[in-house]
Image (cartoon, rainbow, N blue to C red; front, side, top):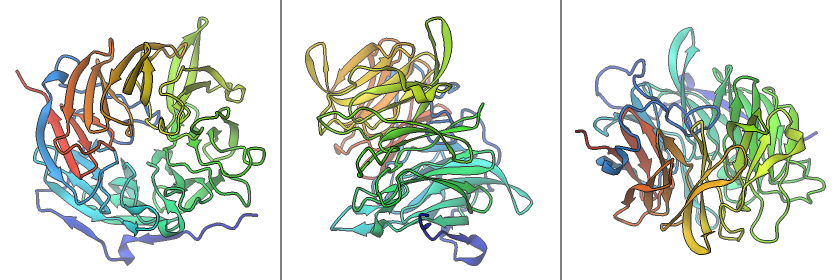
Length: 465
């Protein structure tokens, strides 16, 4: 029986709270407008904002920075919009709650950072938060769930930043890091446990935590006893109609014959019992890790409506599996999003707008032309590319984001907005300092938010007629 890691849960009532509350009026209450309350918008991880009042294909070309604020380190988490605030994390170890109109922090709370110059350098908050109402001590409370920078997942009071609970899994000094963004479902929080940067590899896990107390309710180990790897640096996806949880893994280090769950797409019950796992075929160049979060979508195939789940793999392909017949493997796989090479590393999560999937890659070939970067639309029924953009910039590191008629993606130091119908470039913003966009874009209430690798956090808004 595998020995469990020591899990420490601490409560704000018994520890010093590191929140800095700004006197900017009363606490936020119910949110208004088009929210984006979790990573990739929803539990299906569609990455699609269906109801923004201002940002669409007609207004995207007029987007410009409305305000910019500066963190003390990189930003890789996706901002979220809930509770009339914008929440985002930075690698200096702080989670921020920011007024969307002014860019001034309502509060910021320190939740950990780590430095190791011989291994990973410095890291802080890389997880994207989830915000939802919960009953805490008999009171209805807006709660923020997020991974910290020193081996713990947290619940914070979303109005004040006060720590409600902390659950510790393992120090980054020993290889652990909380890249994964929480999925809140039916009173529990699902989170991935991963290696910080293969330095060293640790045994990966998918954990289910009680949302009120942070206690561990269930764990799925992604590697057999004695093996390391199977990291879940992507985020869990939940089919709310069935309660089934999907996760992707990477970093298989033991022989594939005895490590059946890495790299793989996993299908599990809400109690984290395995239903099925599927592994991609080995390829000669690059690797077959999954760094992208699964996306739930639907398609009509041979006249039959199918409920599917898909994810991009580092080998350059996108795989789609039938959620009702998962063990049979992909119903289709795309052509290469990017060339299968050691440098391709397709890790961007896809977006789904109810009609098409949108993906991004690096080092692609389109119509015999070599492309540094690409954004593509995929037919959900066949995996065929509907259109493909040959673009400059660099690697697609953050997830793809979609709004009605427009798709956004940061490629290196350039943020693009392209037509979801044709792929035409509608918007292009090159970061003045050439810093990379690690963070995915987020669209809410007539604004687009995104962070970059030098700590700039931007709010873009379109011109108003």
